[in-house]
Length: 335
Image: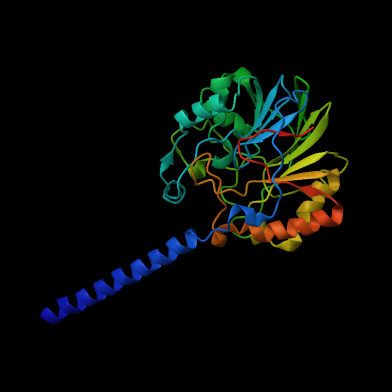
């Protein structure tokens, strides 16, 4: 009996040691991140405050982009809540960080917000849609899934609209056109995590998996001074943007490293090549498990953005396109 317990003690100690070693390895992998300047993209100049006639864009992390012409504001996604790794992996119920959302609305002056467009309805794009709509009275545009997020947050019915592929809405001088697209292949096989649609009102708290993708959109934001394409996920439908012209493109690059250089070239051709965009602003390369306002790249093991950045730079040189990195939280003159 003594020998049995002694053996169990040895095995128990070995197990603990193994777990500690695995934990240390995982910690090291998680903290192995490229520095932000390693992307190699020049940082776009912040807008001159005296240049009041410009249409500006402010990047607020992930694919949250605030377009402003001085009269009207348009917001893609509007995600200000940040969830931790355990929230994502543990299956626990989560909810919007109301204090963070309120602070962001004040800090970035979202007083003239007319429309919110969730680029698709995964949590990192749509968790705060209902709360932002209720705080600002902006119209939510999107799919039935986006409408069910709004319904779950008790957004008034007059404040959300379900658009069909290719349908447009005008707000001030902005015209928004939603064009059906596809999600990047970042999940099992050639698919992605949490596919499908949100088929009933989504009330918070809810599990991350409850924010299903819904319809993925390419959004064309047109203004008399210029036109921008916003690609919320690094996916595409071949030929879908044929005949669409844009001066600038905001390209999600999350997952491109795993998808490979050939896929990246096709993605570039179907977005930048099709539209003739002369300026490209990569987005959705920041680690969305970090606190709001903290800009860090994903761990190399998760998605080494410096690898896909090199592929993008090669494609940009071949097409004489300028690639720029948006400063976080500072408006950039777009047109």
